[in-house]
Image (cartoon, rainbow, N blue to C red; front, side):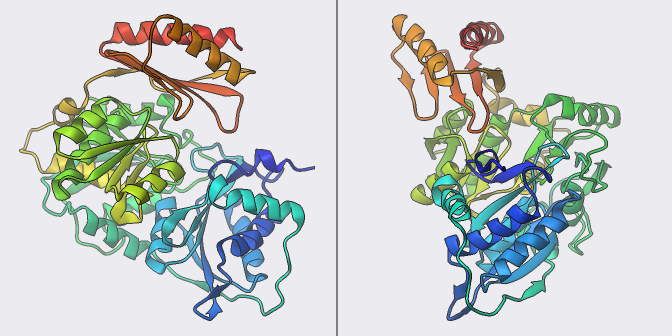
Length: 465
């Protein structure tokens, strides 16, 4: 018997194919999705759902089953074929339709999943539709008494590429050599369109050095998961060997972007958040910028220095997007390489983040390096996220809290897990939404202090394992 709790997660539907996520479940999710988002009727006629998939071999079959579930509820289907997740968000925003993206993002080859959104790329998470979809699947989806919806196809790649190039103008930057590791994921599909000439756009002053651009959902070279440093090794070595000005790495569905500087060093996503925030505040003075609670302290500092208002939020795209909508924020950044843009329907786009980095470096005088450009935004030492398997996450977290309270630490909050702060360091411990893990992030003013806090808190976590 299938375990829907293991498949319908906090932000999406995801599992191994075909033992967890199969065509039958995709069909049910499609039918329930139409009812939950009210897509069957639009302006007195049939509505539509736009659907895309990444390069995983199971994608087309799952899409077909999902689409049939949509059609059986009297709703039309618009298939846009291969796309990055931000390409699907673009289609949802441009067409004003709910959407479904078939991808398992950075997960290994045996996985697939479904990211869902309402019209305008508005997120569907546990509190905004997924829980209701789950309930409807459990209870039985009502049949629709009417004609089947129709299916059409539409190519959105050229419009997507042109739109991104309008949001960040890189046509006048100085020449740059850019190495790109697509990890055999959807970056190999979108990079040639946005940064190259595949979409028929004007040529850019860039020389692109492609790595693993062949679309292959078996990931023959390395997993398309750049948050794992091991998967960045090839890009780092190539940048050093070729003398590229920078390197870009995308995850499987290309909604996240990681950057390597000219030395082959991985750039902290918080540093990129601060850089992009400074650029967005230059265009929109005095605006609100969102950051999650485990980005670097440098981020709110930079936002304040550039005249903006920093708003801190929980980890996760549904929280970031909701807070952006509430505050009118122009930009939001997360430690995980997700970057959100108001002018992109508040959705995350790895390609937009890449364009900002290219523009920022390309606007500097010849000879300026990326590392020197980013130095003012890179102020602290971070541990990165460390996962520890803990049977009783709540008890372990409570024990850590009690220990630091006993030392007189009073700057403690529980916005998302437990955050403990002092003048020179902070750490956050929070539970995974899907696994028996505690996630630790530590930041301090220097390496020794960071390591000391990290090792101490890790020992407490492991004592609770």
